[in-house]
Image (cartoon, rainbow, N blue to C red; front, side, top):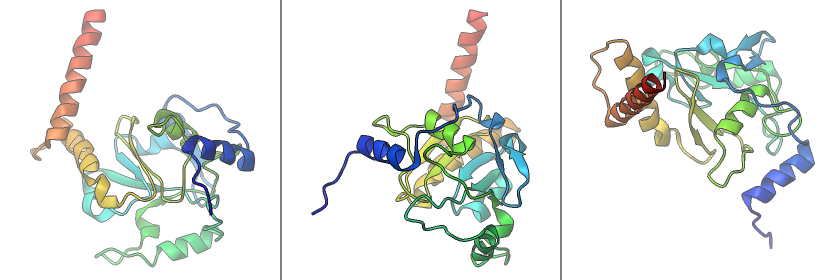
Length: 211
């Protein structure tokens, strides 16, 4: 029988297999960079003022409201992503929306890279530092781990590979409502968005008093 190991032990096992992360995580999401799948070096600042979610299937429903999807292929989990970049895009093209366009056209695909260990790309190094698991561990557990990032570049919430896209929808809507209300939109603001706005106002008042 196999004995279940703790998440802390899993992090240790990851370091044993892939090595310790070599890069020091950056403090600002928009200063992190990674190559697009065509090799073009790209800063996350290119997606400033959009609500970002990594690897999720809600593009068609929320893209016009500001949602962007950034996909980071990785082959560290059971060697489940051995394909070339061209093959990855061809595979993504099979998943089409009502408009007939495939995920390869809708999502922003980056070069295949590591998300754990000594070769961790700096985007995930940043995200894992800012949004560790509840037990304090940081490593990505399996494919399709997801991070929701606000338009200010602030990591908002982390979701595991077993959490379905619909489990994230309320959080996505809250950030999108906050984004649109900030532009003077007449879109109805959800209770979660109102709470976020109130927290920001309190923080601004505190900063004013300190000045």
